[in-house]
Length: 96
Image 1: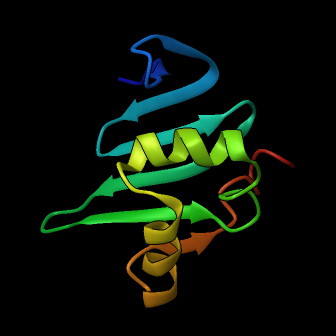
Image 2: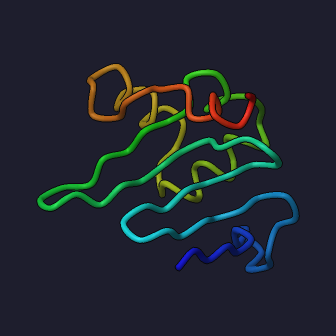
Image 3: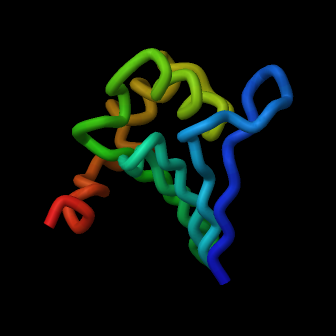
């Protein structure tokens, strides 16, 4: 069953246009109409994939992505560079 909630900001309040989508073994962060990040729970690990086009789109996107991941932008960039986080076009299906 899919569940959608607004992300909770640093103030403790739900944030408009920033969503967390729960779907079986995936947790998805969506900002406005764009999927920014997917956390997928595999059998023995967690796979994190960021959208290659919009993962760092704006300060607002970065702020809420950081809350979703529990990381700062510098650490996220290091994880991308090291291959720990994957980049993919997560919005390709939406744009069709």
